[in-house]
Length: 123
Picture 1: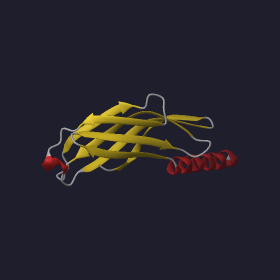
Picture 2: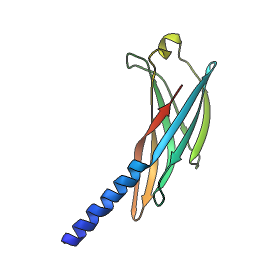
Picture 3: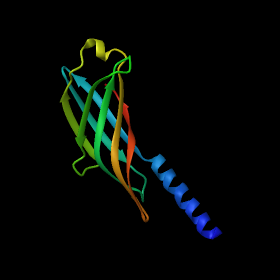
Picture 4: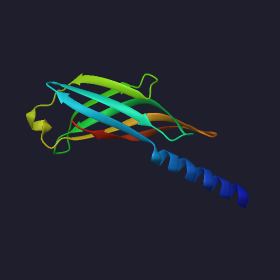
């Protein structure tokens, strides 16, 4: 029984370490009224992250949601997108951008669906 516990702790800690070493990065640029972005999923060898979809949220300096964008990864580890910005000059001041992606994780016998935060750079 102690051996099962020790193996379970080792597997769990290894799984968490692999998840922490994985990243989902979004780079945004604003050109005129459009916002373009690129999202890349990077994982460690052995851990399989299958991105399903993503959501990007834009908050003004008061913390109010001013715009959001969501799309699918379409079966890829990398996706590029463009959408029309509806934010005015007041909203852009002090803008905070966050993101989340739903991913399927596969490692050893573990298979799970998790929301992972996206590291957003820009606009």
